[in-house]
Image 1: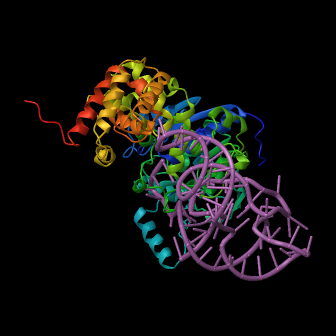
Image 2: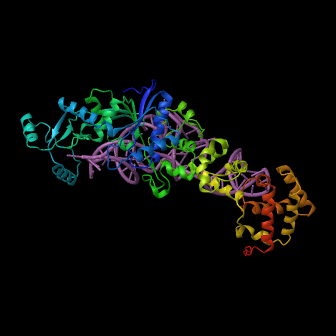
Length: 486
RNA sequence: GUCCCCAUCGUCUAGAGGUUAGGACAUCGCCCUUUCAAGGCGGUAACACGGGUUCGAGUCCCGUUGGGGAUACCA
């Protein structure tokens, strides 16, 4: 059970397609990928779709899309577990033939009653091995009579040991498991049978999965051994919690990849943030690419305690990526938001300019696109509490009119515009800021944003003049809405 | 109920017996600045509790408390 991480590994991510890929799943996939990136080897994608009632093809597709979008690449698969069921049953039959498993004729009802009784006595229920040693003739007789049976694993009576990279050497007493079911009465394999069989067939060396599987592992280990197969090394990742320290739920916002995507989170940011939830790179840098993390990934630095998902930090990190990534790289992710905002027809050059101006000011792609909408509007909506102080200055319309006239005469680059505005201010004996703030409102309707002269230059001569004209008229009307046109 | 896992600032974490307990998000203040961000500088803020072991414990052991997981012919 040496922690041998020197050679290539074979890892797998095995989600159930029962819904959207949630953040816990992505993180598991990421750690699998990082180990594969670090050690070399193969990353297998396996879809555990054996619960037909809850799985469908669309969800399988969805999970692959979500993984791809996040930037996770697998080498083999996707393998559909549902297609391998005959193989699992065949392997279970081998155990039966080798007397490492046996037929059990107890009915669910009987067992249910026993379980209820055991609970009442204050203990846990283990299958009492009622059918563990039925004589061959008895088995034959019952089968003859058409009695249904399940196939149970003959659990060994020895301590179960395995290596968990997160928690160290694990040891469980034999009582911690019972003769669990391998094949249901309809002959279909159970989860435990399927996973172990697949992990053997796919030569998985390292099983990285959620902590909810930790208590399944004592069942899986003796099964590997019963098949005479090498037991993989495990890593059980702690769960991700919500702000209430309970299992992460929808109550506190997005929990799936598609939701974060729809909010305008970049895949790089999601990948980076998720990888840091339960693992630390051992250096103080936190903004790390997938490649860098792959290089320095070290399972010893996986954390054993559950982590609270911090949406604020994710958004901060997204802002960092938005600021540092060149526009060309984020552009493809922007398109759905541009469509949503009705900006698909916008002048591409101007769009690029204003996106550039605003991208370091937004935390999400959605925010970014929202902040850019005013540049493409005929009318800028003014907020009353923003314009109040401008309305209080009776001279302002005249000042702005003068500014508008001056702007009409200058070249539209930011230095020339700034010089022009300062000149107007000086001529009129006012501070530049008296002109700057209302101009910003006239052009954007907002009180924040990029440097004013960048904004004016991006807006262009015509639009600037028009918006200033509107604002001057608005101020002259005393803030009233324009008269309706006939 | 039983079994298992976990426990450092509000949150993510560093810390492998001797540290002024470090960083990041959030928060507060200052600087920069026409504004908003970004950035820079600084502040508030943590070893759950109780026993051991040790010259010395955030670090090792036991217990308590708290949180989580598992207890299926689900995966």
